[in-house]
Image 1 (tube, each protein chain N blue to C red):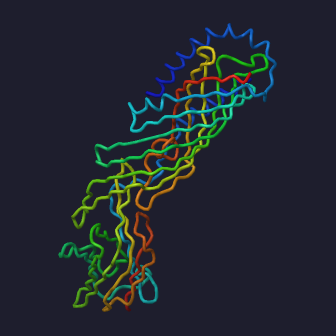
Image 2: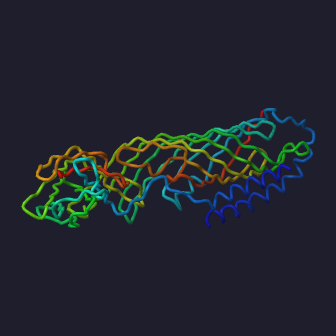
Image 3: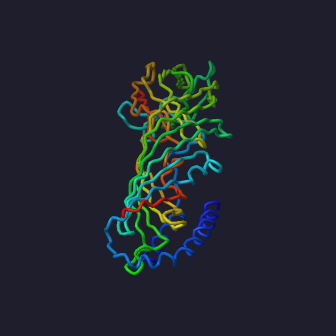
Length: 162
Length: 230
């Protein structure tokens, strides 16, 4: 009887051998946590909910003094995701509206290099400290989730004038 | 595959002395009165698998255990060990260093003991443990390039505090080798219950548990000395 009980225990243990062995950490190999920005009207409607920018929108990131276009999807763009500098603590984002108007966001942030494991190496997270911006077609900017990591949550809301 | 080979080999090693000793002890045991909860003595053991693991793995450990024998059936156990790890990943170039004691408490249940055979020379054991450790670790990460802006960032952490709690269940085999000396092995399934994450790092090696995973396996190969109570 005891041997039978032991056999059941041994079989149960062996079954666990074939069970998945999950890591206790997320392994992100691309090392880029994106700053997710959503575009809204001043009333809080998202661009996809009927509101359209009056001008063609091009968003660029200033990378080492050069403009690097991040999106030029025009009037229907509802938001975007931008990489953040791993070294600098302030990123500059340019909004060009096709004509003469332009706006600039200055996003100050702290970089947090995080060690995952020997195999996965490190990833870089960011903590948004604050944003300064010009107000041509941008009405206001809100930081809704200051920690920039690998989830899908929106970090910044940009409200445009109508 | 290595673990399977180890189990098979050690089973063979254990089988020989246990068969040889069986007949000599049989008569003595019959004279003893069987009681399920009577205190029969203490067992002191050391795990040699932990020392040997450094030859095949990235870490090693030393461990001693004290078990109380109740009726040759229940064995409350305390295990104290010291685990250490000083390694470098050849691919990522990351160095990791940690060394700390760990503690486990739990119970062994001997399935072999019966009223007819109250003190068998071999024991088939069910094993349960709760383990805990608190440690400090160092991490040295070589420069990582920013893929967009360029430039590099590196990370060097010293003396990061970590702690972990885990549970173990397993099975084991123990056999008398000579008089009060026994040998035994066990295989244990480990479940990480919680661990403390640093602000800039995960704990990678957990002393007593192994490489950090939600679940894992471990083994012991123990030399045991039985201290008789009477």
